[in-house]
Amino acid sequence: MKHIIVLLLFSVLFSCSTTNNRKVLKKNKVPEYAIKLKKLFKIKKASNWEEHYFHGILSYSPIELREKLVADSNYLWINAFESKTSLIKYIEQKNNHSQWIRVKTKNTDYGLCYTDRRTFSKNGKSYMNLRDIYMYEGKIYELILFFESENFYKYLDEAVAMMESFEIIKEE
Image 1 (tube, rainbow, N blue to C red):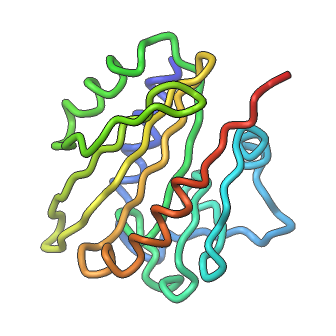
Image 2: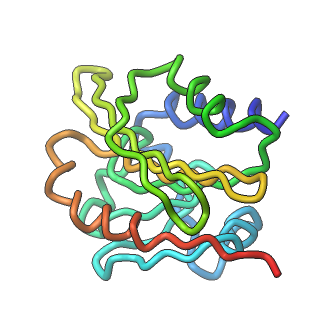
């Protein structure tokens, strides 16, 4: 059931493609899902990035790209959810829908982290993604960097630093 919800979130994410669909809530109006999600991890946000809740997803983006924030690009998206399937099976299922390429696998305090990348075109624009996926205590944690190709390398170092600062808050 959780996988269906995640797939539905992805379909909504990729079906919206105009800045008119952007809905950013004020800091004092943090959605319930974001409050719950933020209790599961810590991340060091780059000083020139902002947190927002775009299409029901917790994400971060460079402040200077605020007006260029669209469904396919210019943010780091973070999600965590319960999963009864293995991490490898989840990755294989997701990779059936797109052409992700494994960049590296690293050992972390939470087990293996898989880092993948992909490029794709949509509506005449080129996009690049970078993704880290962990599985810890039955939850899959996914961080995906979505950027237009023209902006990808400009913000890559900041985004990777944020992704590397990601820490799962261990339940006691």
